[in-house]
Length: 301
Ligand SMILES: [Zn+2]
Image 1 (cartoon, protein in one colour):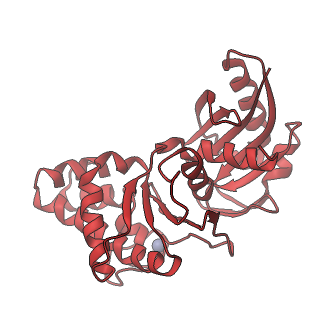
Image 2 (cartoon, rainbow, N blue to C red):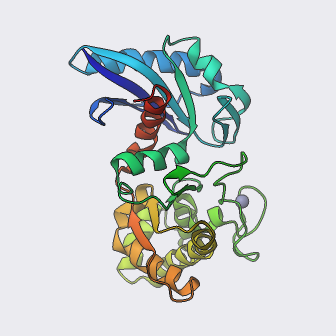
């Protein structure tokens, strides 16, 4: 009998889950579409996921705990999803909902903070204790590790997406102009490109075209990088960050993303070039492995 935990990452479009042993081995994974009205159904979703993962594992498994990672504002201690625009809930008792359907301890976490924990245990931040994690997805949030501990203050910890970095910048979904998310998220890069050129394309397409030297793609790409550096530099300076870890699908752009970001950050930090800027290693598994990490922590494994 193997011991393992279940990690479930509830995203706006997909629910990704993993069955993970205390030494980090992944025994099984699933990806399913996020049901509409997922909040009230989260317990059923978790119970089904546990059954499916253990069936797929190929060995007998004792599930020790379940971890669930969600976006938005999360009270991890109380296990409450305080607010998620994407998933449409407010003040939802996620832990009670899941605990009613599974008979093991349940941990609730924030997707980006849990993802950073997973990168620290298993991924690209294994050798670093002072880390800023910024996944560039549909939206944009961050997490900070300081001396190996997650920074977790108010509910708004890490919510850098709606900080205004260019008051004359593009309109954001929140109503302001020039939010970081409206310039540097993968969603915004693709949207700005499509609006400017009339060609439908995502951020990875913009990266390819910028790399090929197309002026409009280069402009939008560079504006995204500059806005990110404007936000990242003061966080790095304040928190004593040694490693900036960029996550999300855009990390496939590799040096097209990382090299100009290193240059922009160095310029914003008065020439300091001792801050590493690297791609996250776990990709879109960071959330499910992060959820597994908080479940392992919960049961002391
Ligand atoms: Zn905004």
